[in-house]
Image 1 (cartoon, helix red, strand yellow):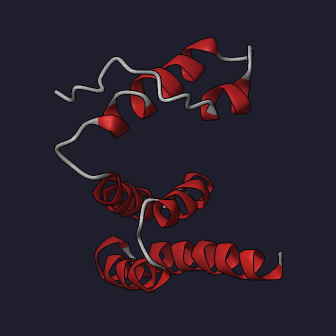
Image 2 (tube, one colour):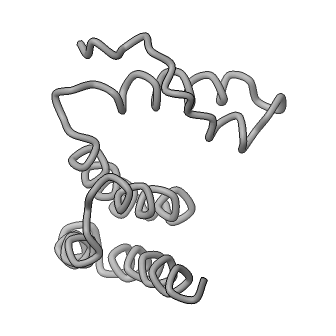
Length: 115
């Protein structure tokens, strides 16, 4: 287990999304998933991002993919690597899933360049 397992990273994505509406979802998102799982050291955050993107693409979960593609960029995955990963995933997860994920990435990149 990671030495960081019980540390609070200050992650507040669940709190920001749900506030007091769904305290269980807030707890497991912020304290377990991001404060514990994402902080484990056997995989880098970059690798965790790629694994997460692969799973979300394969499942067609475009809402969550929006966040995780941007998060992957912050975790060191380049736009070229993301494009290549999504192309590769399209052959294994289905062309529509790959196309949808690529559209999400395209929108992230284009919206950033317009800002």
